[in-house]
Length: 210
Image (cartoon, rainbow, N blue to C red; front, side, top):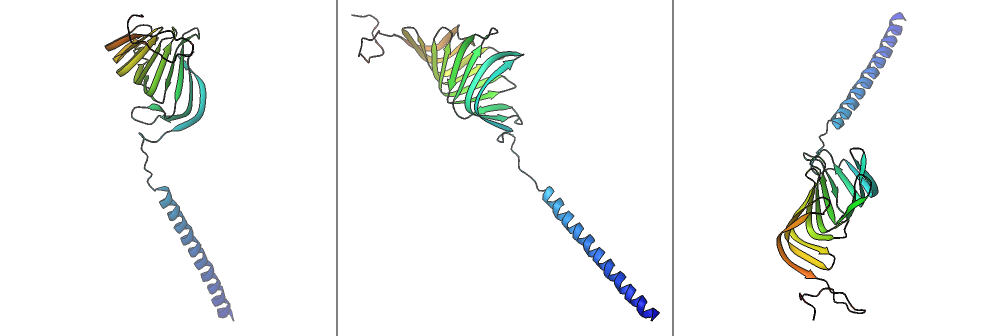
């Protein structure tokens, strides 16, 4: 009888031990599976993957603690992990620049824009329109605004409307207030003609009125 009880006890022990081993193996298997999942490589392109995105933006931007800009855009993408960190505005962007007294100095509109944050350089692309405090309007397809050098420039066709005159040419540079500028290869200066009611003619190409 004692031997029979011992055998029954051994069987129970062996069963418990087998169950414990099976449970341990299951835990090890699940752990290995989890470890495999955690070690899967993820391809991350720092140049093409944005770190943050904002939509329907209307915000004021400070420089050295002073509000200097107002910006409005539908989409604003941040690429802060890129080798040359930048902001990207794939849709239209509108920027207003203020002086230290919060008076407007210039306004800028473009279809697309990049802003390289370390260089403090704007690259404005497509239907670029800039207007200064004097009401002069600058129109081009590509414009750069270097805030470090306080300079605005382009190597593309430029059209400048000033009062009754239109200046055109290829390439220009200006201070960032757009009060002192020059066209590298000027083409023409065309005087506007005051239109009579119902007259749709915008420009008179002759230099003298008859």
